[in-house]
Image 1: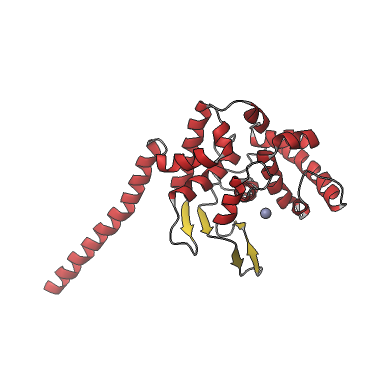
Image 2 (image 1 turned 120 degrees about the vertical axis):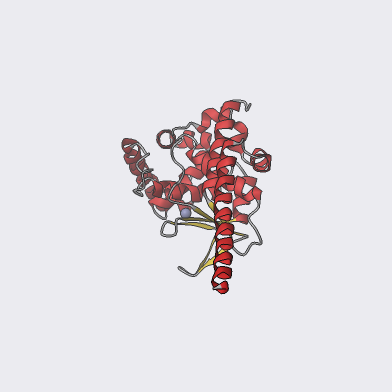
Length: 265
Ligand SMILES: [Zn+2]
């Protein structure tokens, strides 16, 4: 009898510890959502994210709010790393927000896990080293931190792994039926597919193109590379292919050229 009481008591304590652990994390996340973005997250974004640096003050606050929602709604998982730092969380979230800034309701809902490797990692699926990938089956976005940092270290060279992987996630999110889908204007998206086909043909024929050769692998890779160029070389893209620039701008509901033309606040 006494044994039963002891067991029951121990069970209750364990239950209380478990419930407070779960609700504690939940409550903390809820409270953090009402607070301004913490300085530990804001500082690295201000330092390294060129897009954020160019935003006017009011937009900066909107950007921070979206970053906060992203940080507290995703699970950041360290792979071959001792921990995920606040800087990693902030900068990776900022790259997602950069892409979805003009789409207020888009949070990349399906992708609730962010996996971070220190450097290129070996994928057992296709037996190759990767810098990043998007895995819709796992709901995961995977990045090599080294490659991610390199992308923002050179903000105008048209190569940015963070934007690239977030673009893959965004294109998939548009078709995954979870309540967040179909945010791309259908007419604009259809036009983008036509323009993408033309540009991919040009690259494959060895003609001059603003896009690197890798963009011609398929339509998905073209979309991801398009976004890298759209954010890092918008003026050049507009000069080379104004219609493609406008289509991307209309899909994302934002105009990077106008942003970069304005002095930042
Ligand atoms: Zn890709």
